[in-house]
Image 1: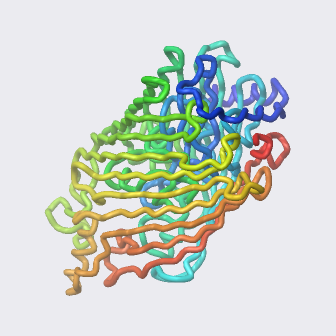
Image 2 (image 1 turned 180 degrees about the vertical axis):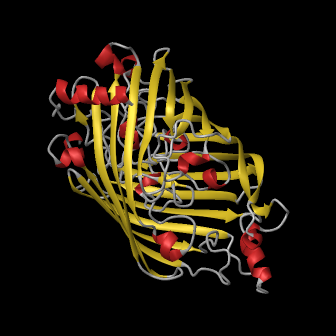
Amino acid sequence: MAAMLALWTLGLTAVAPAQEAAPTPPAPAAPAPRAAPRAARRPVRHAAAVGSNRAVGRTGEPIAAPGRTAAATGPGAARGASGTAGGIGGARRVGNLQGTSASPTTPTGLPPGTLDFGNGITMLANYTSESAGNPVGGIRQGVRYADQFFFGTDIDLQKLAGVSGAFLHGIFTQRDGHSLSNDLIGNSISVQEIYGGGQTYRLTYLSLEKKLFDDRVDVEVGRIPGQTAFLGSPYYCNFQNNSVCGSPTVAFTDTNFTYFPAPTWAGVLKTQLTDRYFFNVGAYQVAPESTTRADHGVGFFAPSTGFNVPFELGYATSFKNDPYPRHYGVGAIIDRSTYTDAAFDRQGGSPVLTGLPGVQRFGRTAAYGRFDQYLYRPDLASPRGLSVFALAIAGTGGHQVEDYEFELGGVYLGPFASRPLDSLDVVVSTQHYSDIGVAGIRASRIAAGLSTNDIDRQQTFLELNYGIQVAPYARLTPNIQYILGPDQIREPSRPKPIPDVLVIGAKLSVDLFTLAGLAKGPEDRL
């Protein structure tokens, strides 16, 4: 950590911040070339919301151009940051994980809001808030607010110290506020994805990355949340609800997949098999203490209960080699760690009734398939256009809380030619709880002599929002959410289902360096 701080200090004192805007991209050719030229391999990462890294091809260009608005959270109410949807991409790790106010970057250039010292050190600072109220439904009605401060840096060691293909990445987050789902709705999945991880300060990310074999292989080791390399999409964090942003809930309820902002020790290997096909695999420590409020991301010696191994094989294109960029992937999470059974205690009874801890079990798996793709672009010289995304994930082994989850959504970037940075977004996400997942609710109902016929096992989230680039440094996303069949995982003793919920929300994200006049906003890149 001391070395990281020293490098930050060097960046602050060595060179004045660069104020040059990224070059305006040329109009994409039609038809686009089938492969990116060799000269274009120089890695350049692009900003996106936590939980919504842009999918990148070998050239490091984004395959899509979503609005970006927030960081993410963890299981139920503490999950989030997703990762690169495909390919190796470049080394702008922080740009992929921050909650930036920017709508899309164009196919080239640093992320909006980047403070560039010109010596290999870049920084990003962002504030994101999410407000939500439920005028209808839930256990009771009210309003809640949560927020996050984000600071991160990427250090190009080739520029700074002559070490070819090597990079350092660091992220610090501070979270505050309260959850509408926890306090008033009663379900386990938050309508404010920024909430989670203990609402405290954390060293969220600290890693060393090395590129090998002409940038076809990327190796990264350090303190890394699992979502930053797997199960991410450019689109998920256009939304405020935690069912979509930043990764599907099943990944966290059915395995011990690690989540933002709680890192553990990890190693990630990304391989670019061709200019379009990739294979990524990782190994992540499972350390339950790392998710506690007291850990602050510095529990380097927290005891392990095992590890998990996510992997994905996929196909991804970029603006460089496809006028309608796309990403397809199939993968799995192999969880080789202990977990607590939700249905049975150590004596075979229900933990909800006996108060005894659940029995400890070992090993679970989940498998998934997903895609995202541009369908329509009114102007091939602009990233404006309609994209769709979909995902299916299911638990495939072990005593698991959810059977499956499906997502389907659409993002229209620049719905009006006069508003090229705005976005109109819609998504539906549905998850089905297993017998184990509702066992506590069933046991409570039976013990009270009540019927178990009306237990909600299918929870569905719908969200419609409009992202408004209100200033070069700020993005506001008002949204409407509706929850059908809110789960009772957190309220197993409630004698009747939680009423369906209407949520009115708003997400605000501000790039602090742009606000201070030290960095460029997204309008400088179109």
